[in-house]
Image: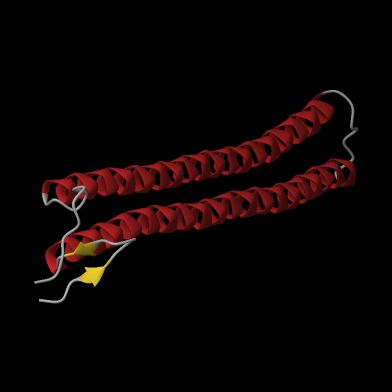
Length: 168
């Protein structure tokens, strides 16, 4: 049986070469899997952050629209008071002031909700990034473990013995 040379003046049997190849493939797939998981997590985190930003922008638009509607409502109330001959002092002024306060509270609530949605999306993005980093570290660690295990198995098979194996 002809042995393949591997290194200076060494020949390894096919089983040892298969063990080395299997170990290399196993190490490579572990590391590659970790890298791909990390990349996918980064992409997902970017989308989560983008969704949070879009939610906040939408809240700003909704708040602007609500502020406009509230202003229009207060102006309609003023016109109703004035057209009916009511002075804008005393009770009518208090009604208008309460309407303005209510309108502002609605605008503030919309903005708080948008801000909370953005914060939640940002936190989810951070968690996703951390999961990706953990997968990367795990893949590298698993690869190292498999490389060591493969080396131990090859050593048991005599791959690192000091006397060279020769062909028969």
